[in-house]
Image 1 (cartoon, helix red, strand yellow):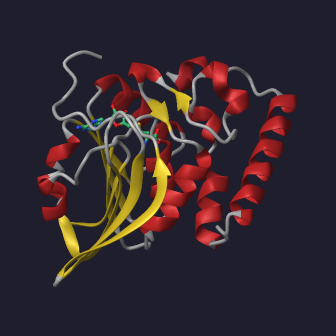
Image 2 (image 1 turned 45 degrees about the vertical axis):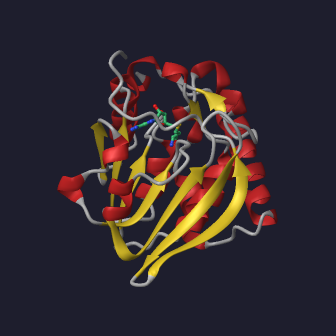
Length: 227
Ligand code: SAH
């Protein structure tokens, strides 16, 4: 509930944030991520609003951080790698599975025409919606539901990003991806190491590229009964 509990602005904190963001943007450049739109998106979204209060000074540290409901927000480098791999254009409609904190969706909102994001925990979906409202992000729509089913009412999508691990890509997501579209997902054992995979859907089948070893929380079918 960031709007109500956000403390008064502390100039020292603002300065620490500025240094942390500058360091992060430098690391991105060293990793070969220089695309102007992408860098602008990372500059525009204050990651500290998406991590728990006690982790705010670690917002740009290169590791995943715990959020509510036993879930995690991915390391900023990984968000950048996945966003770059998705190759989002400004006329695109993007589907994200696993809203979590909403940080990835907020980054995508600066690159795409519209972002639809699905989260199985209502608590997380509502907190993310509040952050989007606070940041005046108006082109993200959040659904509390089972992302393995996709979002048929809004299909089809130019791009799909899955931010939770599964052995394979759920069929509904492949069906809701446009021909020529790109899907990025961590594929492999949900409790182990997965391979971040980019799938491009073509008339003649799917092209598969393996990008990096990653660890994500599992993609769990069904809406969460609690929280
Ligand atoms: N993209 C997020 C991090 C995602 S963590 C961010 O930027 O913070 C993965 C999220 O996927 C968790 O919040 C988890 O609850 C959610 N998830 C897992 N299975 C799901 C499903 N079937 N449908 C929707 N969300 C799911």
